[in-house]
Image (cartoon, rainbow, N blue to C red; front, top):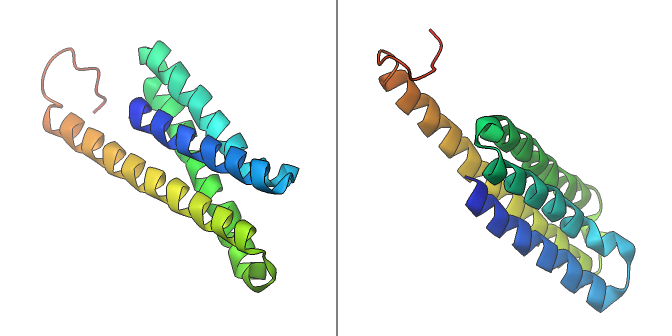
Length: 127
């Protein structure tokens, strides 16, 4: 899951950088900050295989926050937003929610496969 997380991180960084280039507003960089955090977590997960599960769970929390922040902003003041701000918020919401959905599916699949192989010796699973 770290490699797809890096792709979504790059997309979020591009979204934030593009919005900043157009508007010049530092708040337009919000997607880039979330993307940067996801990129660091995914990079660490690739480097440290033993901590991958924990790092990807932290990345899922970042993705959840990355979906919650624009969802709240859209719910509160979507009518007052500029077209650029509206697009950035919708884009960040879509990217973060898609990543979160992929992560949840991956976590469920990993748990299911671990439960199916729970009887094999040396698999490290808990009973």
